Length: 368
Image (cartoon, rainbow, N blue to C red):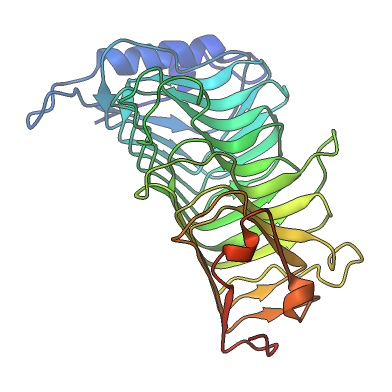
């Protein structure tokens, strides 16, 4: 295995390193070898980032054919950092790379039109992972997943002990960027473990297509407000009509902070399964905006379950269509502000009178 560095291709302190990175990735492409057990070529180089690099354009650009097994390593967050000053995506992956790993690297944007990764797939572009990585600065979006045909994937992506900082006009992770195109719900399996999600504004995850999403532990904070006064959400699922196997969200042992009335934990039109287990969003429950804050909002939900959660503000359920499979259950939960059913729940819409009742089990506030 050969280790290559941007410095090997002309990167130098104080100098724009765009061309050096492009030469580096072109050299990585030349060193691919055939996978003995399959037909997709495998990378034979590691990339080492041992400094701060400023770039003004995309450093990973479209290349024909598929490849796998690329690894990029840094020496630590902010000690190894790529700073994007231009409006393009830092990385462009068009049905090319899978099995990609990033370790101990920071990414920062000084251009509000930039994005970190644009990934368009018709079958490749899967199995990417980030460990001990960080995003900060001002972005249009972090990662945008897309696809021009009905067979795209962009699936199996994970983030472990990562830090999402900065600000996002759209979202940090946008799943299904162009839903007007024919696209299957094959965007699935996204895993966040032990992450610090503490950013200024925008959506953390917006899924217009697909999305079997699992979140395990972490600190989630929306620190500021959108410049246009709009809503920032951790989880935003704005479209209905997905397959049951993809519209799942499982969140466990996460502490949320909603510092402003324009923030939400979730706004969802999914009719699948949503579970919050052992979570709390009551840290700012003492603030004046908290009692009237609609922190969790659903339209025509499927099965929604809260277990052992401490909850702030109100929860809203809008019933604009009938859904016989709807079930909403709160088990062993507490509330910071509104401790009666009438104060805590908003149930409205033309189908609300016939909707199954919201069930409370072993409720710590005595709601039945």
